[in-house]
Amino acid sequence: MPDPSYGRVCRGRTGHAEAVEVWFDPAQVSYAELLETFWRIHNPTTRNRQGFDFGSQYRSAIFYHDAGQQEAAIASRDAEQQSVRRQIVTQITPASAFYRAEEHHQRYLEKHGRTSCAVTIR
Image 1 (spheres, rainbow, N blue to C red):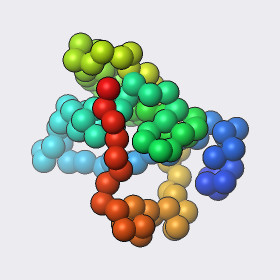
Image 2 (image 1 turned 90 degrees about the horizontal axis):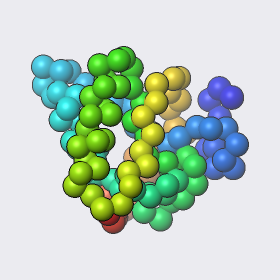
Image 3 (image 1 turned 90 degrees about the vertical axis):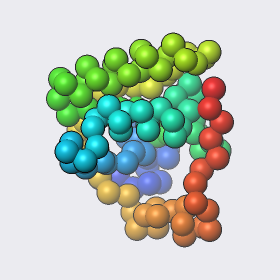
Image 4 (image 1 turned 135 degrees about the horizontal axis):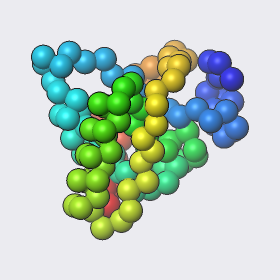
């Protein structure tokens, strides 16, 4: 389903995930550095949940654009697994169409007086 509403995604039948699309300049930050940050800022060991948010749209996932990114993501996941007790459930899958969230979800935390999500790591 192209460009589904947040309500449709929350019903769990579209297969979409809430995600952040990151555009980066490799001269400024490497893909490996982005992966390090990814592992540090969320809990990759909880299936379909991040903090108080739950449902398949909140699954942990890395969407790659080429074979090099796929290989780097798998290697970083395997290295991260060595430092955590629980099984990492992060999906590593090809990127597909990215749909911008509806306006009421843009800068959601800021609009609700928060600066970050509380995440319990492993």
